[in-house]
Image (cartoon, rainbow, N blue to C red):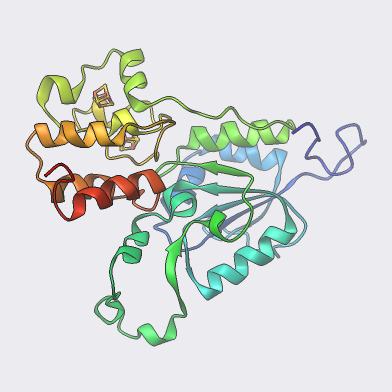
Length: 274
Ligand code: SF4
Ligand code: SF4
């Protein structure tokens, strides 16, 4: 991307600020909180852009003439879908933030059940116009940039905004969490403690947060490039996990990401090697 986001071009005397919106679909609000968690940096940001719509933070202006729209949450209702289709037409750049918007999130687990027991979840499910499946935003409209994470980090958001405001796409992470462990010189929790860890198949970006606290990664940044999920699943089996546990490792936050969905499904009914 070479074109400046500044309407009228960066050379104009007093160009209007780029218009930004932050929207929420079906989600927990965690990724929006990553914006709010920026604190002083968010104030600095608000001097560079016009935050037109960000209900969690206050502004609820019209969703028209937008330069960058960030969307949190998965498509779960017909109302979500209509909003996303309308906003796509009004946005020069559409960015999905977090596992829900980018892969369908934890709520996509309902896609795996034969009948969603909505009556057990909502007192009046008939007032909610559910879609048949819970899906990522990109399944219905073109998305320019996808930020993985559950939640995304403030640093990811800032880096993305700064790049877009300067007319460039942000660098894309391709490494696995394991590489981050090596860079940080963290002892591998799987090798040293036998803790199952999805780091070998998960995209980095979190700074190997969980292994730094002696926990295995549970894949919240989604699949890395060329993930060897079959080998890792066998390693989990060697660590004593039964097939159902292995399936659940993959069918978790990013259960709807095709490579995790495929590996999870292979182990759901028992070991694929028996
Ligand atoms: S702790 Fe997990 S992410 Fe870190 S090196 Fe070991 S397997 Fe990879
Ligand atoms: S280590 Fe894994 S689960 Fe933990 S924050 Fe990073 S990507 Fe997410």
